[in-house]
Length: 431
Image 1 (cartoon, one colour):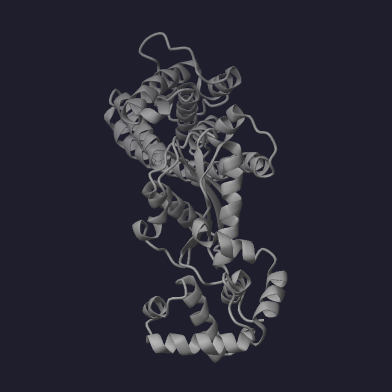
Image 2: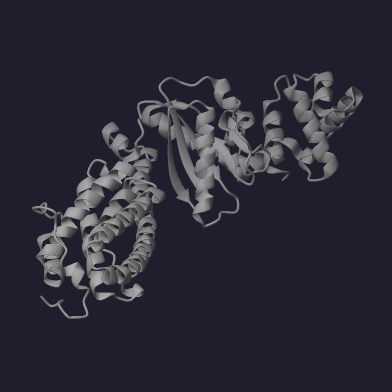
């Protein structure tokens, strides 16, 4: 062996398992490299202690022993113990302290399985405490002078190694979570893009990739931030609002897809179509989070309903950008406005032709337009219009008369064109 110099802590080289050592979990080349530096006895001791250590950690943090996680975790624990023994033997500088590749691999798997980072790091702390205790037990059989000197050294070095390992695993965990999130988001976005384009997507493919059942009634949301923050916190705020809206509507499941910086697409679903009032009451049941805004699409069934609801939500979001809706814009309430303003330039031409001088952009004319719009919406009732506008009935009558004068012709029986033109002017502004 290459590590038998007189300066090496000889007690480490005398470590032996209590019986026949278990079969190593690490790869043969890893075990062979450790035996070359430490010898067969210390490696057998490390394998035995690692087996006990892994079982101890899993009892405290069961996530480490989840489906598909235990074997790589056991391998990681064993490799970590072997590296710790080699470190105690050669005392590398703290910056050169190594983290076993097996530990990084196990850590990455836990990240992909969404095991919280604090649970992962608790496993690290439990493991190092267990190893520290077993090493002190071994030192208890040494002479007093060796025990006094080595106890302090072992404690100090294991603390350094634990700190290095925890820091490295935390960094790797965050990086793996981000890689996993991006990969998952990309796959989900591809399936959603196909669905929105009307391309056929099998229900099993959607369920597997999206974790979402298409054979449901869907309502889409488009959630935006007018001043997107590139930080993760901004995306978390959008997802949290989507979750609150879904929960308040009593949805069975929620699907979210990041559409870009400051924009999130979401779908909530139900086995049966939700009652209209459950969606209409969302602005009152969910706390407003300015500057975030949300747009809600119509309820639809299956893949086609999934697509149509999203299109409705996008139209509602477009109308909301005109600045004349609340923080949650419901397509059911602005569908006519969405239709009227789908081609803004054409809509303005139409309004200008129908309204004539009543399309002028000044405060007095805007006041006349709004009064005439409400008067017609209230069934030509001056009293109802006055109550809606909080003005006197005679004021309504006067303004309506002045607006008709500017139109240049009396109102017809249905005056549909006038009503549409007034709505366009309200949404898009004067021409």
